[in-house]
Structure formats: structure tokens, C-alpha cells
Amino acid sequence: MILDAHSHVHDPLDTHLAALDAAGVERTVLFPTRAHPERATDLDSLQREMGLLERALAGGSGDDGFALALRELDLALAAHPDRFLGFGSVPLGRPDAETAARVERDVIGRGLYGIGELTPPPDRADLVEPALRAAHDHTGLPSSSTAPHPRPRRTSAPSPTWPPATRRCRW
Image (cartoon, rainbow, N blue to C red; front, side, top):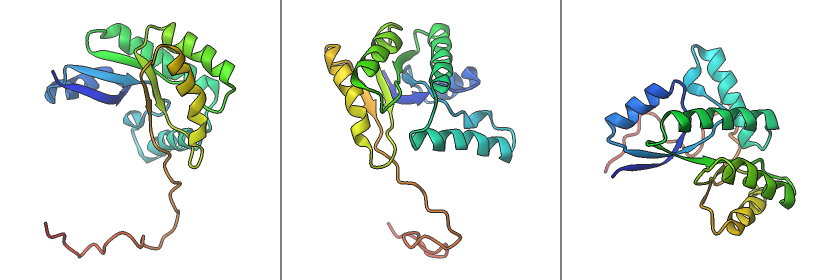
């Protein structure tokens, strides 16, 4: 069996399933998402979706974003329970008791397999600790975290780590 251990809800779901089928993937660990770049129809809409992702990675997203992402996850899981293994996320930076209650309601209460994807903002990996404690308290509920991403530098100068375009790699 081929298992995709990290995927997010896509829209439309049929396109996602077709890509999984083409790759021979039988089951997929599915995470909720607040950004949907696949919905973009032009550069402006892509920038809006990527702005949602950037704000989420920086630690900013309201409860409305989580609620909508969980509803989308619920719909995908209900439509294809034989294909998807759902994981539910919780907002970071909340008190332990609130995080534990959200794990109980939004993960355990939904019958999900684990917690994730937990993505703290740069230099704030400590924010995942309440969710990891809650996972531990539920007999070691699986969890998935992504290392914080550094904020990109916005500059017109070429990056000093990027080789000139004319240079060729020799393997």
C-alpha cells in the first residue's frame, strides 16, 4: 500500500483524487488548510491565497479560518472515508486548558486520527507544546508539526546563496 503521509484538502476534491490515483496512492493523511492556491484563477487571486498562507505561517489566523478549514476537512472525509485519514489542527498560542478542550472537541470528537499540521511562526516552536501535551494525554495521539519557516527577504538583489543562472550543476 502506498500512503501519502502529508496532504491538504484540495478544491476541487476530484482533481486531488485523480492525482492520488495517478500516483498509485491508496490512502492519504489529510490536513485542513486555510489557503487554497489551487483555486486561483489569476495572479491577484493567487496572491490573496498566498497571503492567507503567509499570515497563517506567521501565526495570524482567526478562529473563523480554523472553523472553515475543519468544515472542508469534514466534507472530504465524509465523501471518501476509504481514502483519507483525517488530522485536525488547533490554534497555537492558546492556554493549555483551551488547547486540550479544542483537541477533545475538534480532533477526538470528530473521530480524527491525529493532530496536525502544527506550524508555529519563526522562533516560536514553543507554541506547539500545549498541543503536544494534549496529544500525549490522549494516549499518544499522533501529531505532525512543521518547522518554522524563516520570513523571506523582500529585495530586488539576487540572493547570495543562489548561483548565477548561467552556472551549471555537475553531478
